[in-house]
Structure formats: structure tokens, C-alpha cells
Image (tube, rainbow, N blue to C red; front, top):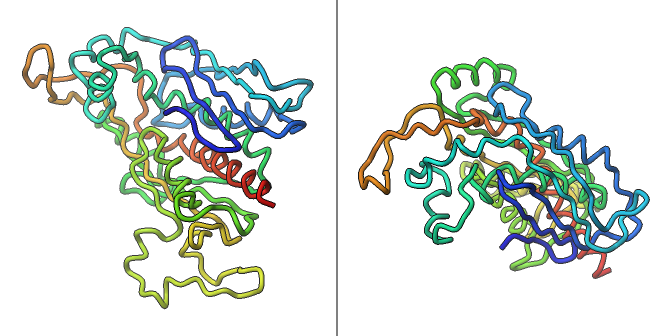
Length: 328
């Protein structure tokens, strides 16, 4: 379904080339000051600016239609809407019978019996993450934690000072490249999360995998810990607050936050829409044919995904934080 959360509850709607996208947030504490400028700042971070990001530029001008009065949350559902104004829907007509490799075109056609909106990927599009960024910005206003992100790898490149030249070369090849983003929450507290099925790391993984293009999530050292023995992987406590000498567990023990920095690494796959022609099945002609996708697409979507992942973590933490306060 298209909603998440228990006490901080979000419902997402819209399509890439529809009139608008938006989000309805229920559970915002009454009286919370809503910093509209902060929402604008986060939405700007998501917009394509760097080399290798899409030429499609939306203003992401939003309207808060309910749950907001005189600068504060009223305590009732907050409805935030973002209009889509820069659309070229004709770029997608030929994809109805010639679905794009790596996209949701084929499964959407089967699941929704052809009634889905195919333009720009419809409801499956990364365009909807703009609404999630807005929700995440509001979530950050609730939680006492600080969330940041950084791109740590792009394709085979680990030297982030060489990103522009690397992406330029990928663009010349008419191809795309994936990346790894590290998201970190500091000033954390002990106690967020509910075993077994409400573990903090389980909820974080669920949220991260909800983002289009995410294909891998690890907490702390994650898969790299396979090279360590237990004596090295164990995070030895150094004081009565639970501060640990290492942080291989990424700030989570037994599904519950332990007060150390929360560290999440997320793999963003290479964008499926590429300039290079691809040989794939054509359903009307019943044969494999060359597909030239066209359109305006990201070569390195990971370059602007950091703020999206920050927002997903913030939404998750806001829900967990309000649950924790309710128990207290």
C-alpha cells in the first residue's frame, strides 16, 4: 500500500506526469512549528544540479492545504501538494508495448491490467520522492536527532573529488552508473525499536527499499563484517552511557537503538533509462527489437538521492520516537 507509520503516518499519492503529487501526514504534534523555508531547502537539494542529473527541472513549489495554521501544525492531518509543471508525456507512448528493461513497466501492466498511468513511470517514478522529502523535512522538526548523508562511492569510483570527470565519461557512453550513499543520524538516544517485527533496523530497511532504485541496505559495517571474527566485530562498551569503542552494529543492538551514531549505507542501482539502445522484447510484434528510450534521465541518480534517503530515515525515526514517547 501507499502509507507508512503508526503515530507519524504518511500517505503518498500521485504520478510522475499527473497534475500533482503529494503526501498526507497524520500524527504531527499540535503546535509544532513548521519551518516552510526548511522544506524548500530540502526540496532544492533533491533537484537536478550536478553533472549527470536529469535535464527535467521542476520548481517543486508546494502548497499546504490542511493541518497548518499561522505557522504551526494544528494536530489534524497535514496535506502537502506539489504540482507537476514540466512534463513531456509523449516521450513514453511507445513504451506501452515495448517496456523498458529494469523498470516497472512490465509488472505494472500485468498487475493493474493495463489501467496504470505509464507516463514517466507513473506512480513508480522517483518523481514522487519530492513529496517524501517534504514529509522528511517535517519529520526532522519532530526528532531531536541530526541526520546527514554523503555519497561514498559511484560505480567503481571511491575518490569523490573526481566525480564530475567520471560521470562525464559515463555520459559519453550513453550509459548510467549506480552509487552508495551513507546516511548517519547523530545525537541518538537509547530505546527506539520494538523486537521482533518492529526492529529499528527492519523499519529502516523497509523505508529505504521503498525508494525507487534502491537495491541494497546495510546497517553499520554490514556485509563487510564477513571478514571479521566476533572478537573484532563486537562493539565493546566504554562507559555507563553505552558508548562503544567501535560501531560495527551501526547504532542498533537487538533491533533497538543503543545511543551510538546510527549508520546506514544504501546502494542505488544505475538508472534503467539510458541513452544507449537496448535489445528487448516488443509485445505487439512478439519479437526482440531495439529500444531507444528517449526522454530526460539521470546518468547518476545517486548524486541527488542523499536528501531522499535522509528523509526516509527521518520519517522512520519520527514514528519510532513518537512511539517511544507514548510508552513513557
